[in-house]
Length: 407
Image 1 (cartoon, rainbow, N blue to C red):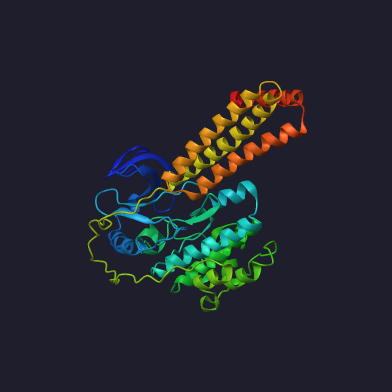
Image 2 (image 1 turned 135 degrees about the horizontal axis):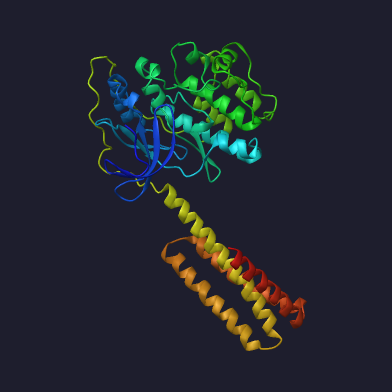
């Protein structure tokens, strides 16, 4: 059954369709508290597989234990009804694949931040006893320069014969470890291999095992060597270890954290797992216990944006005030005092809000801005004539008006 781009699904109000994958469609939605979330509605061929659905329902309990700043946490799930779905934290950003395709390889501090963040995310996933099984550039969202891993555990939970036969792709050749492609037992080491392939792509802008038909890429993964020619020298040796054919020879996610300077998460004790039998009924429904953690991903982004705008206004109005006061000093000195006093009152009011909010950085910023405006006024009056300052003020006002109209 197709899911409408906007509508109601359980307690969630669907806003728009974000995309689709092998297992379901992802929708931007609002939860009952008005927070934005991502709702993944499973495809009909997945929802009709009772064994896979039962396994996913049990895995969700473990997946919910995964927490971390680089994780899109599982918040809710419903495995009953004609449209089973998962709810995760919504991360507002762009997929790593899109970032590299648009801007080229990731370099410098951004590459180090990406590697450390992905290592920390994988360590958090593995600490909860979960295996991602589908880590790739499309499942890494870059938001405010930081990576966030999505869709962990879904491919592993839905790895059943009927789901595979119905057309869902359980992973992406080039990022699947050799043991996965060969049908051997898989574990956290397969995610480390995917980490190596993902980082190789991010650092070089090329697929480490080339492109082409999926069987050809899979053959190169099993029998060939990765292309790490353009990977920086500080990262290439680590990726070589991650991409070893032998799972036992690869570092663990916690090893990656230690070598990349990331903070490993605490070990989480997962709930006991039950065996999967073909005659098990599907899980009825799962809900998070009691109180749900506030989401606030988009809300936090809006707060950071408001703070950035506030700082720009404080600095910009301070520069203009200092220039106006200096230009008026030679003609109407009282106006200079009035302008500086008005700006000072505005800064003090903003500082008061910072004191009430117990935001020490805001208070310090406002005080420094106020002192800087007075210093700018004194410097301009000492170095330039009143006529020059009036011309400069006129130029600044024309530029500001032009920017305002352009906006």
